[in-house]
Length: 140
Image (cartoon, rainbow, N blue to C red; front, side, top):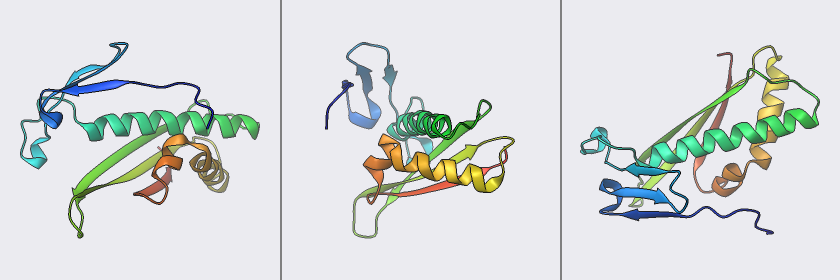
């Protein structure tokens, strides 16, 4: 791989109940375990960060494949839900659901663009075969 950019982040003070900052300080957040997992919920959590990153990255991939296909998707959006839970074999795992909104496109064309985006998105490539990722094309 020819690396184009490298992001750096440092977690301190207790992992999920600590602090995270990037080397350029553009991201600087307190972290807290969600209330659903027995924590205070008084900070961001890794699943929120992953969801935000995946949604943004997938949306960029979607825009790229739409441009190549000469299709306008100016009102599009991508939402991501990241779930965490215990695995049967022990430890914890993640699951992702992406909701793709492509107003004004026929359902089959919207699904085709979403499927192509899933093949080029770096997050999709990183997670493929590792976690369940569901892509739903929805109307809004």
